[in-house]
Image (tube, rainbow, N blue to C red):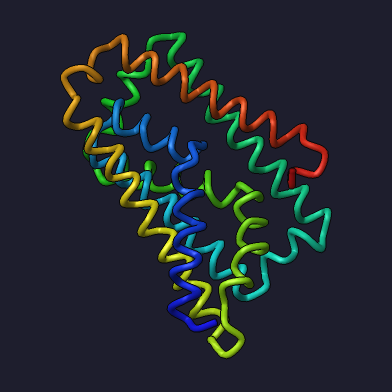
Length: 214
């Protein structure tokens, strides 16, 4: 298998994964509706940063700890679950007290708000051990024996990132061009409720799964 065949083959697999709705999609959509285009792209870039780190770790063999060490996997699983539950509860509590619009106003367009959006996307991805397991299982199949492991692993992660950013761009600009409708308070509240519930559900599922790998 050549490098180009590996890249194209992985692109097909990663493309299908990208289209499957998950926590990352929910976070980006929420940012687009509640905070606007810039915060949504910052969140998406955070997600992409997490993908790059997982790709490099898988290529170096570092993330193999997740499959060989039950303790390492459990620690990351609990940390990720706690973070998702915290985000979900925080979102729902803010919605209950009518603070969603206040939070968005506090973020504004300041660099601090964009940095927090990036960090939120990165942390959500990095604390999800299932992403690590996916890269451990999939990446070796697309890395030719003669190719540099780290460089090829990062290249595959970049392919995944490009596909992810293209898909997120479709969602973000879709929200932007329907802004008149999605900017309604009722729609924003509904999105906050859905996102908070999704984050909470994913967090609880991750926390109570027996080994988190199924």
